[in-house]
Length: 536
Image (cartoon, rainbow, N blue to C red; front, side, top):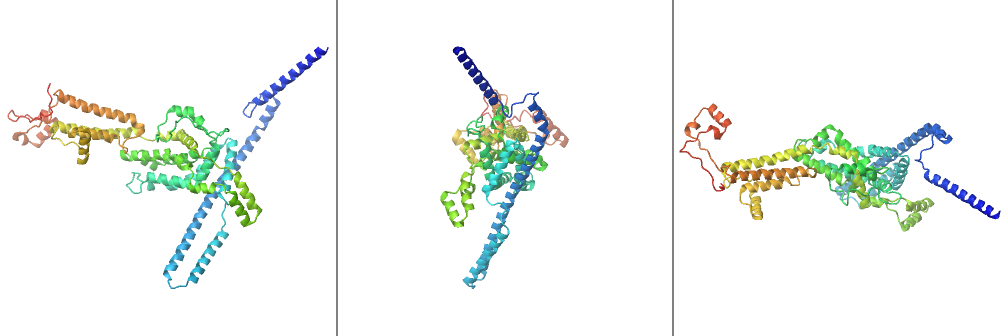
């Protein structure tokens, strides 16, 4: 009986442990994303609450959107007020300096009195117009809490849209227009495109640089502290090429996706949308009709996009000074100077403020998200790069055809087909030993094709094919000369009777060609340059 009791107890304990382990396994497997069974009381109850839950979620999102928009607008008003105060102080100092220069015989006491009154008036104006927000750190705390709330609700696109509409679009519209793009040149050349883009980035960084660093530091890390999506593009990432491979978009888009990306959706998407939607700007940038203008526009936007993440995320001295935490020594000094408990508490709380860590990996990950965004792919399709290559290939083909035709008529030594300067000709002759002007022209055409202001990286295969075609054309020309198919330097001499024909007859002869229309007498034989006329 004792053995049976012991076995019964062991079986009972084993059953209890197995049931407990099965229950623990079931609870571990359940999560917020685990679907509930269909025919259960709990599922039916949640289905009845679903409309209320959706309505509550919509109200929360609306409240968060209103609050985020208000915080961003208040930041703009605060910065505008600070700029106005700086301008006012500069104006007051300038007026004081002018008064000092005009009144040389006035006493120093009057000057001191005027300065004291001016400072008192500015202080009174500052007291009557207090700043809307207290410190940038509190603004960052509020914006960070709001962005986290959007991310928890899986509505990061709402936060990105509000940031783009309130913070970035006004700057883009004020910096990019068809009038500003053409400053310093004729209409349609977009001479000031690079300066406009650079000015816009500097303005965005000065106003929203700390917010972009703050949000990127929050959402670019996973739970283990690793940078999200720090694979897929190698160690570079700043190659400045717009053409992306399909597998990079399809396989690595999920690896680089974050909850909220203000760099891509908040900054780059509004800029790209403005450039693609405005009809005048779109025509001037993507389809100017001039090869040099198209190449300059492409290089400017290529450089702008390849350096956008680093320009916005690298902390500057001014931003670091505003976001760094004060030391205990400074906090104690502030507390003793003001002698209030609130300042002491605030100084202690600043130690707990979140500080983003911007590294090369985070910048590389942000730049990768820029390249893998769908707006970037659509932006690439606006460029007429095949047409640009046709224009450039037509230029070099015309130069080569003129050189071949002139050598065939005038001879190898007589024809001056080189279009460069004498200094370039001497350098080519000394460096490569080329003596004939024709081969100097061929060398100059080939090097011109790969210059920085002509060559484009996405067209590398086309430029290489064009260079091979030009070399093949030159080799065929030389081969025809070796085989005797071309008589170099042949000059057709006209007789006086032929030259004195009617204008209609002369026009007919020009249309038919010299070789078929002119009958050269036997006594007037053509002069042939046999210096490079090879015979077998």
